[in-house]
Image (cartoon, rainbow, N blue to C red; front, side, top):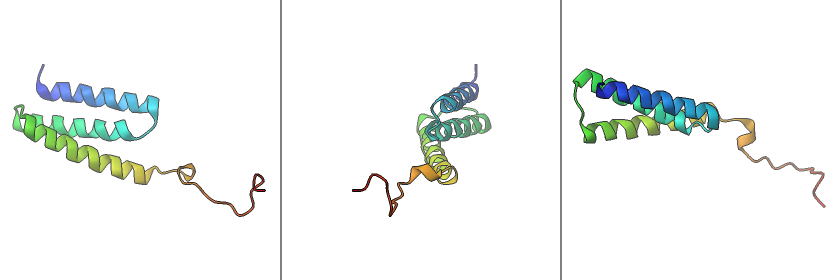
Amino acid sequence: MEYYQIAIIVGIVLIILEMVTLTFIFLGLGFGAFAVSLVQFLFGDLSLGRDSVVFALFSLISILIFRKLFKGNNDEKKLMEEDINQY
């Protein structure tokens, strides 16, 4: 089994894990794993330093983008002027 195939399997597992947790963290990590698999496929070898940097950069960028895109209304606390629990 090639290194890029292992990275694809890791990416699929992370995206399936995201479907269970719904936090958009594992989705970004899954895209990072897919980016690593693409780099490994294009350059044909395993380089721990290069693959770690690619994974970290793509994961961080993906997590930040997905958090901004899928931010729901319930993610922010809204202060209401008239609250039934306010005494």
